[in-house]
Length: 293
Figure 1: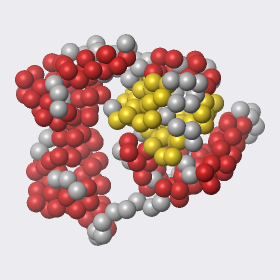
Figure 2: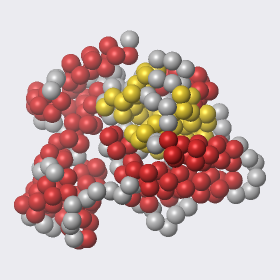
Figure 3: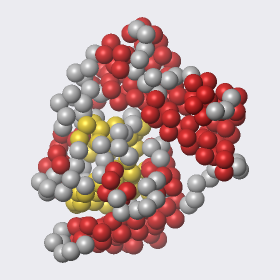
Figure 4: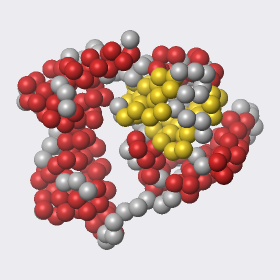
């Protein structure tokens, strides 16, 4: 784990030398990595299928019960923690950002799946009974293939992963989005990408509208139509989420976090955070600390 940030890479979680993929049964993975119950982040894609056990897990500070035949998906940068109450087992797969991108001509392939959009409520899926056996078979095939020293093993794992994503995608169904032209939908996706890249610097809708060569009113209309919230709220939510992620790093002071997010001073940051999260940065951090004791 990086000493300054609670961010893990695949190499730090595996005895294997493969920097792009880790596949394991969950019980032995958990036994080796007990420290992962504390809040932390990954710089890779992470998915777990529970087959037995109980307790809770949190994704970006949203709590979910651990249930058998529940699968969750996480994208790089999300914060995560576990609190198990009994023996837990299943499967875990970690893969790097380039792992599938280097295999596919369509580099944004994963974006078409709603469970890879970074929204926790869409990323935790309870598998219906009728599909459980086939999902388990896919995880078993991935596990067995990953252990093989044969040629093209990595490509076979990639192929099986894509089958898994397609099958889960069919289970959850297509994205439900309001009717909107292709041009406007592309504008909104570009806005979201710009927010992801610049939220710590640009905090006003008009700044993003200028980058998109549209008016602020047009941007707000797009955001309200597709996301049911104004563009300003999209920006504020992303800033508040990053603040929460930084607050789990207890080595950073509140002032340092405010500076990283380009707030004029600590007081302004604290007022912003309390309005968004309902409690002060100090109260939020103490809540996290108490939960990990």
